[in-house]
Length: 186
Ligand SMILES: Cc1cc2nc3c(=O)[nH]c(=O)nc-3n(C[C@H](O)[C@H](O)[C@H](O)COP(=O)(O)O)c2cc1C
Image (cartoon, rainbow, N blue to C red):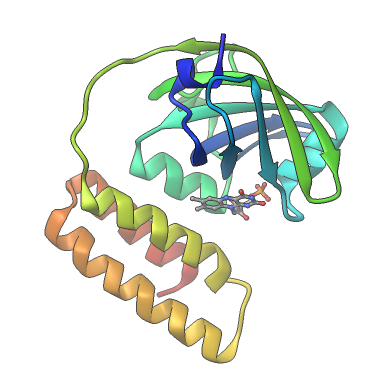
């Protein structure tokens, strides 16, 4: 078993992290991989519910997902039960999910792959709308907490990405982008 078996490659892999503490939490997190043929990875965890849950449980389930709505909802709130495979920390439209043991060292989380399952091997071409939605979400989670010139610049970038989603995205990317705009009040 190795990280590559579940779709991870060298670099930063954006997944939906499911964690459990006082309550179940979902959030997009970047899993940093040096060697995809190993079982070791890292993440940087800034103060969040995800981090609080990991402190309590020492576990993180990474869901490898290409669904724009799932990314958007989980960036701002938690996914409801209907998104989950009953009884599993896995999302219904995940292509794979895997369990990591986590050791926290301040903002660094050291991850060790424990188990995993591939759920869906469907192929999919690159969609620029999906790619820029992810970029816009990264900016949008910052947009909510900054002020002034930084906020103005982020707004500009988010609205630029909307043009690309309008041109290249499917209905689901467009729906997700509208949700993003609602979450941040744009
Ligand atoms: C694509 C993407 C990647 C992200 N990667 C990280 C990350 O690696 N570490 C982190 O702390 N936050 C990351 N974030 C931000 C968190 O998802 C965001 O702060 C979220 O609101 C945390 O939710 P929580 O408080 O429910 O855990 C990322 C956001 C997006 C959209």
